[in-house]
View 1 (cartoon, rainbow, N blue to C red):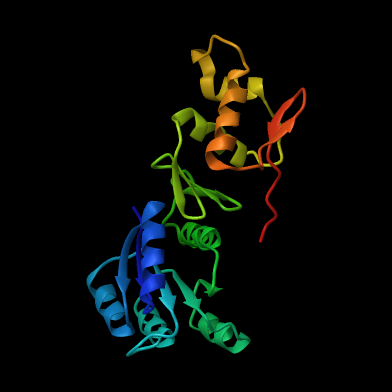
View 2 (view 1 turned 135 degrees about the vertical axis):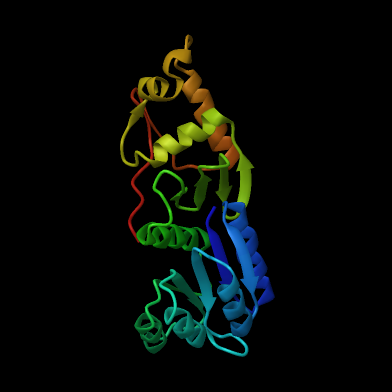
Length: 224
């Protein structure tokens, strides 16, 4: 399990980040100021740091500079300061990514996963999958939409995962049966329709499109 250090003095944002990251499977430690962050960093091992700039005692730039003198741990800066000068300063200190407040949680989760993959600490087969405001946790077989967790059956989860990993491709009922049911299926292929109907209702999603007479698909999500 990846361990993330959140350095944020706003208690509401701190709690929001902690709860959300734990919900999608990360281990989380929080620090409320720069001194506490450096102390925790010196005593523990982390895979990534979410670092606010406007911090008490030592600001985020100072924390980043001190950490960078000892480690190349991935750092994502979180800040309400969105000027070009602030971003350049952060990039000069070799931060891995930069996101301004207010931010989208699904986008933040996606950025974290991308940075961890680039750093080699997150394997492709062991991470989350995101699509719009939907997040799939491959370890716990749960789905989150806008931070709310939904329990899916194993089959529902596998169907949804299949769509998300085949964006833009039409999946026929037979393809889904062959891939997910394999030799366990001896019935009406319309069982696929029932599962998709349940998914749409349970998650209140509209991006699984019905291709009449063929099957289903979701459109490719534009790259951000």
